[in-house]
Length: 588
Image (cartoon, rainbow, N blue to C red; front, side, top):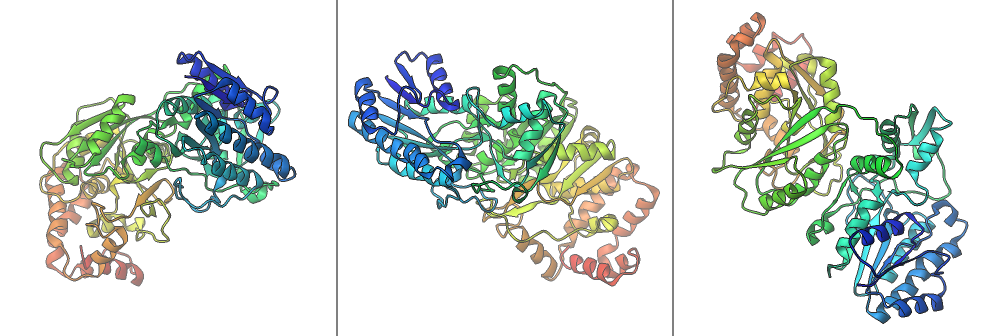
């Protein structure tokens, strides 16, 4: 197979040629600006017809984003006309065409991961020229359009090199923290391109390294790995004006890659580490990372499963392993997990013989590690949410601050199926009264739970029969056992919690509707809450303080009396609190 690569003097073109050579392709011709002026139609035609390539990988581009605002014609010639000429030549010789595009074709609003067919609204001359280039490339039937963002590689300038250069003379830097996207390592991208060109899976794709971050997060990680003592201050885009407007949201959905059967790129933190170590020959500052086991329960979760697994594997500053317990899925859930296992040795799959329901699917998985001391921390995960890269390390740090035998849970950001933020929130918990709140309702959402090793040991001392919520059970242990601690993080930015028709919790109604249903409908489901509390007291009474023993003795009679009267005596007089608890008890 003959392959022509343009822009070989740039970051991606260089690595594409290098990867092709590594794979044993002998007939690869790479051309840079001095060898081929892609804005010269005749020169492009002569080069392509002379070499007769089977594939053209078009990496040459105008990438000076701000300069393009003053040099519109030059930018247009390179990104639009140059692509048009290459497309025409590719059609002439019957070659496949790979066109590299950018996140800048989108306006970049909101928090959703943008799909390949979402509306294009470029904010800059550069973004517009790349989108027009896409339209030109699409005229070739055998085309691959690949959108990338925040590229870094060995050949040429990039953000990583800029930060390291500044670190030589600066001890403090201001970096934008409200533009969110994904770095892309050209070595990883080149491998994907080489996988694509041997197929006929033509179309448009998004390809970046997994996980998202801000430029501020990216800079901090660079200095951390390189061992540079530089203080990074986060600033808004408005505080750092540039000629060209940049999208604030550069999150790109990889669904098209999944559907075509292509592998996603590794997490951006791992990619950065490889780049610094292998390409820039920087000795990485190695630190012992906390070992976290994430326990995930799955059941017919193929729709969102890949995004959730990828977000877990992209967690920062922790050594993460994933234990997935599948509850007799009938769709492609297990197939997807097995595909991941071929590339990720830190994923373990257990398939239940019978459907247990999610409560005991989680609990049984946790009890499988009852005597295991391999991991420092244990976390729960649903199959359809999306974790931001700092979710686990944030929990670990707060647990460390609190002390041994701690369970952490947090608030969450409610989103729709496409990860668009919903302008709603779960009802707040008054944690000054958390003991009494726990009597009224479950105050822990399972997918936010992280516990240390000692709390795991405490929680697996006794196996609870006939309880209805695993997270409620653990919250009761955390709140009422003398040696345990409960930490609740009110910041909702670490986990994007999907609301959709198939939610296990909420019985298809969604979390918001579920909460209001439990508050306002008549006649509480008293037996389930009461039985959970009684079961806890039976199993853990030796771990309960004298004060709490009195409380639990009274719980036995809680629902046979007027609930609000019982609690009113234990909440310091405040009408708002009494009214809140009274409302909550209407369902619980």
